[in-house]
Length: 83
Image 1 (spheres, one colour):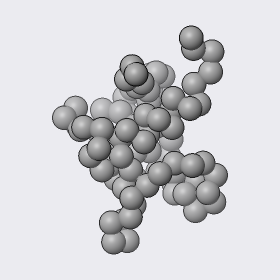
Image 2 (spheres, rainbow, N blue to C red):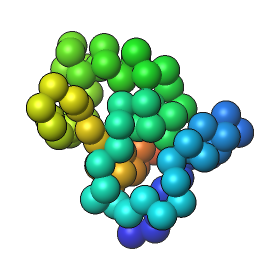
Image 3 (spheres, rainbow, N blue to C red):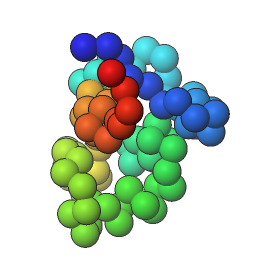
Image 4 (cartoon, one colour):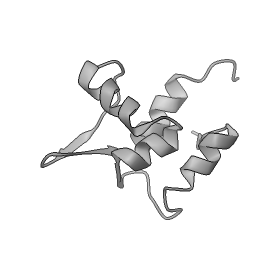
């Protein structure tokens, strides 16, 4: 499967907040995950609390973390018009 990355200019700029050495299973903070998706950090928190999307997360104590591979799958599920 090909690697899907953010495509808009703002998402590309925000994705720079994630270090290039991040592997697919490394845990990202809510801020890093939101930047990668190109959304506000608070929006990601609301989605989690309201169960709006089936976006897996990991609880580490009171902290919420996201795997990059899950974020990529989330993006891929919402891809329209690609062949």
